[in-house]
Image 1: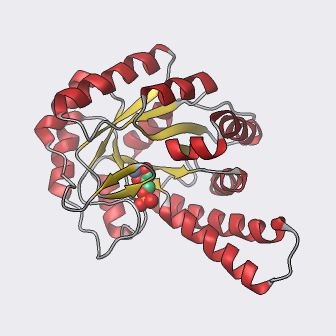
Image 2: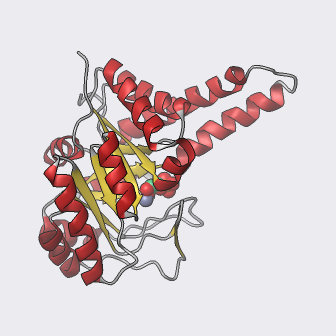
Length: 286
Ligand code: G3H
Ligand code: ZN
């Protein structure tokens, strides 16, 4: 059966109600799109492909959209296309125009009232065309493309503020800061589960965990049990891809065919995504 891109909330609602999480994996080029979709097919897993604003700058919104739509046309599992850490209203508009089915508006650097006002504007626009929206409250440490937050600046999400934020913006899912960070962890992350439970109790909507790379498996499972229904993974996929690429480049210093080095990168990334889908419990759900 041929599939069109589905609204993000359709995937997340089913995951949220059934105690598993959707992996949202960052895309930048064709090999990455293919790697992730191949994993979803092999695992019979619904999947979200997400592009940062940096990815859109790098590849162009029309290219990314065309690749993901081409993948979805051939796929037999549901796929959503999501804007990751959108900070620019214009980019959000462009994504809607090119067929994204889920948008994140990241207004976490603003004071609560301004974050609410800016996020609500994106929600009103996206909901008008059936596209769901993720908001962010609290600051997630580390670097994700243009969003830089120092460790000291990282601020955990306040459950009372979360309740106000969700009620006043109408977001469909909420990204929270509970101890994860973007990029590589220096020590072992230690997630604040009581805080997560309290936020989830108050907002009732699917919770999004950013900085999913390197979070220990037991903590991932506990986060899902407490309401996380979308987990973002970027760094670990980059690592898998580049490790294989480096190995191949070293092994074939005279290689003249890019496919010979990119292909193994793609295959290594597929394996990493499959592991995540099994961990998140999304395998076999499509
Ligand atoms: O928004 C993207 C993610 O939060 C990725 O985080 O690179 O630590 O996996 P990560
Ligand atoms: Zn993130």
